[in-house]
Amino acid sequence: MQRAIVWSIVAALFLAGRPAAAQPPFRIQFGAGLAVPTGSSTITDGWNPGFTLSAGVLVSVGSRLAVTLDTGYARFGFDATAYELANVEQFPNVNVTGNDLYAVPVTAGAEFLLNSWGNTRPYMRADVGWTFTGVSKPSASGPNANALQFPDPLDDGFGIGLGVGVRTLLTANSYLFADVMWRIAWTDPDPLSFVPIRVGVRF
Image (tube, rainbow, N blue to C red; front, side, top):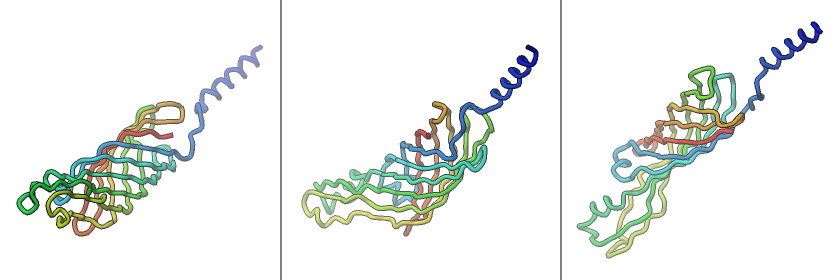
């Protein structure tokens, strides 16, 4: 009887010390949110805040550190009203659409958890990569609309991202996360910078 009690205690201690579920070596994440252009002035004067989408993989290399591989998409609406007003003397009664600016950062980086325990944990992120840029097809209608010259300000360029966020446990194998990044890409002729604010899931 005493042996049974001892072995029961040992077994209980062993089971209590084991994690409830083995953590996977990597996680997939998807996010979406708001994207705010912050520079250069060519961009902030000509395009409005838009949206961002992202997908990525996090590979754990320690209890608090993960390597990240991400692809993002940010789209900023062209400020057609401001453009029409700037050209109203030469092109009165002309309406424009399209010419939205988009940026696609493809990055590799790291994420570091700021505390070592808890279901809700803040983190810092940093990454580097290449940012592809372009504009959607513009269109214009009205007198002499074909003579309008639409701005297409950027080429692709190397970029970096820095940010902070927080993740919280949803289920045994999934998390909800929210973060804010600052991104800059050294595009030609002027750099592009913007702030994506994301909410998403990891599993």
